[in-house]
Image (cartoon, rainbow, N blue to C red; front, side, top):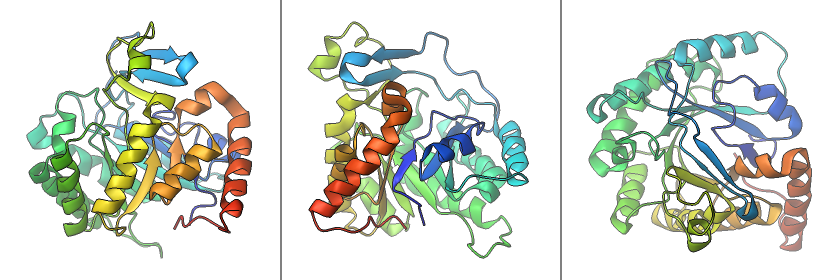
Length: 305
């Protein structure tokens, strides 16, 4: 169970170095990563571009990661120390040099090495900054990937009462109608534990295109993504018939945004960009506003199991 439905999205703490600091700040859960099997530097700098007037950011980090071995060491050390309350998600990616055909093996490495520390796992196949990654969202590739991921997880010996962590798939907002149907079909047929909707977008709304940094390549996050990602969330809820847990991400900047995601079908929400602009005051303000909106509509809690 999540202590509260607002979590920190992957990308902020790529290597698991400040999990408890962020949980102590008030997040209900923290998702680290994306973690790749081998260390890699990511794309050359500059690779992050702010759009402060729009509450947005364009990034092309490219899965910069210390690699599975280093992150495992960090998480193992944390396991022996006093930890803050809250859940941990581990977001996994493939190395840039790994072909699409061998991608499943990369995710399997991350799952085998890190799943014992995770409350949930994420297969990230939707970053726009790793060449060929989004092709893994195609129906045939996704089926293979989900099956291999589950096999890798189930090969780990589970002594804890909770059993193996659920596996979620993080999808892009830039999908065709057929893509959405295919992903929903795979999620239902393969009994995927959940979908994170969504990653950053390669689309550029007019107000972004007009910005000085709007022409930079990479994924757009923050306020300009809210409408697009929430519409996709609602559609995926409909296509999966409410039978697949959904995490709402993309453009959450306030309690009202979080509530909109929940009303669109999300059980929990996550954010990153808003934290960059609003800092430590973000969470208490969001929680207060979310509670007020829930109570106004007659709800006493959010289903975030």
